[in-house]
Image 1 (cartoon, helix red, strand yellow):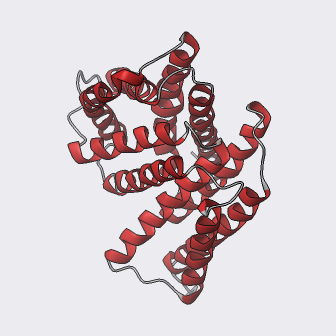
Image 2: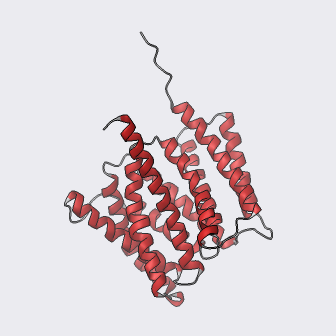
Image 3: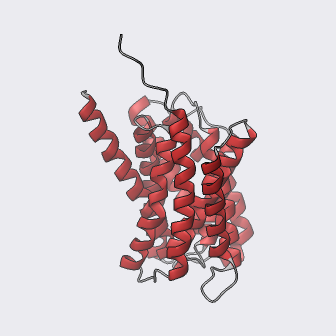
Length: 294
């Protein structure tokens, strides 16, 4: 495969993954915002559908009956991400929820990077401060501020996804590891759903949306994303995800008739711009100097 073909493949896979991530938020908000299903049932169906889909893919690709890779801590983080995601979207618009989620993910990964000894340039700290100010502005009390409980759930979801992502660094086979993690979430989510029995309700459309979210947008979407990562540096992989909240906000306006508020636009510019500065500096520092010709 030529370099041009490799670039085209990476761009195509990345675009498909971003569409899958956007679809996940839209499907979740469509189901929960319309009270078509409760958050716990949506989460359970989503994870079970994702686990079944990935198990079938593994069986077809690797001819393995049960993936042995993955671990219980990663599975717990995956479940925490999924349940926080669902509980958050009960009261948040898709654009606001996605912005809080991505902000929390990036803050978590940057904080862990600092803890592991990574050092930021002055411009990176300025970007970090700008992003933090944007997030504070978004969730601060006011007429258009998001619901506190929903925002808190989405922050927890983002932190969990950040930890889950970092635990996946260096895995030998991302597909097998992801499949193993999804399968491990099944008993966790079934037990946890028992705590929400009194709130359980579901219409057929809500069930269908949860299954599509799990099987296609989550299961297949994550496989596509891992395939795209083969052609992306870590900094670029983080940077392209900053486009997701914008795609989701306008998707919500188009498909769910949700307003794009001035507060959301200002916060988006601050959070995404600030994080973009951080990632730009990290990417620049990671690029080795060009070799001189002999």
